Length: 319
Image 1 (cartoon, rainbow, N blue to C red):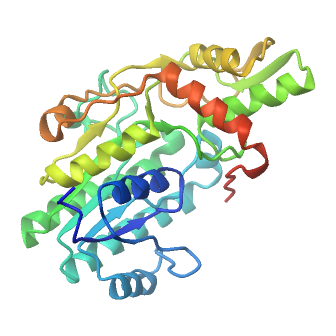
Image 2 (image 1 turned 30 degrees about the vertical axis):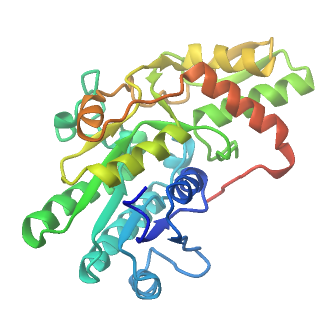
């Protein structure tokens, strides 16, 4: 609680999915000076927007969560935009934060930065042992440059920045747009709408065999603040649960929560994405004492309940 009391904190992406939970937890910790920049006021893809933000906000700490992100389809359709926007936001923000004497810079990488055939569980030491899965490589590589920059700036300038690599996040307030969302909100919406139509089946991408690891958004927000409080190294750290589930089993779990009793049709013409994803979370537990509190079944139930109660005010992002 004392760590945040007198700090002025900028949370980029603070009005979004993960950011809204981070802001709430900062408020609970007694942080009374939180700045959440809006894109209409500060275009963080431009150096001018970044400079104006840092000059106006004068932050002690920056938590950089803003990103252009989506599922496989969105990554394929926006490969160039995802690469450029994410690279420029992170690179320029860290540089200006260094110039302005920011005391702590917290950046979020992505599980997509790992090589396509990383041995499971993914260990931080494996980040550079191959090229990322092709469908989201531009996004993953742009975010991985935050790690390169963090390490270079610490070595040359002594700049205190950390880079965290979360698995797929999910939970209330997620993006439920069918063209741009990640797998859990997309499955929830597809199953709910199929149930309401009385449809006999739902068609899903790939063959259902890939595995993914998911982290509840509230756990992720807590993890990020724990790291900000206790971790001071530019060595990467995974954020996750250490447990994976196949997309086929995930679809079955979500269908049960939503009440969809039809069948799933798998479209093998569509890409599966990375074959497996599951991370080693030993370092997060050792370095800043974090372990996820929410199991997947509990988290899916919470997310489905929120979705059904907020159908008229869904957060939908298009590119």
